[in-house]
Image 1 (cartoon, rainbow, N blue to C red):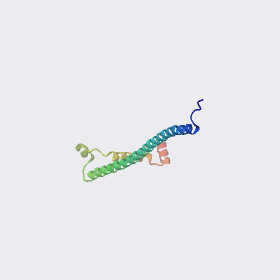
Image 2 (cartoon, rainbow, N blue to C red):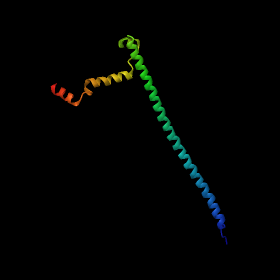
Image 3 (spheres, rainbow, N blue to C red):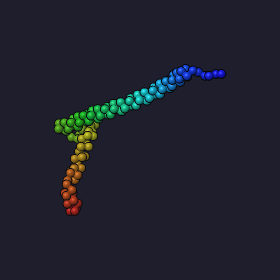
Image 4 (cartoon, rainbow, N blue to C red):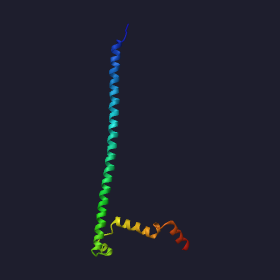
Length: 120
């Protein structure tokens, strides 16, 4: 009569088989966690780089506005500068547009705007 493997041998083989399967799951979990960590770190680096570039662009734009104003102060007219090929810096144009909005009524109190609307 075939009694099969001894109990200890059967348990040892099952344990080895299970250990290999558990090792594969551990390797899978570690690889997926590593990928998530790399992705998160990449997103942090991109956000930091984006912020740094934004600051650099802002500083460069401010220098352009300052240089444009210096050219105007030196006696150049906006038209002369345009003829040469220099357009008004975007940042200066945006700031002037915001000032126009304030002058046109955005900075006035609601009471002043209401009185102006009624009298018009």
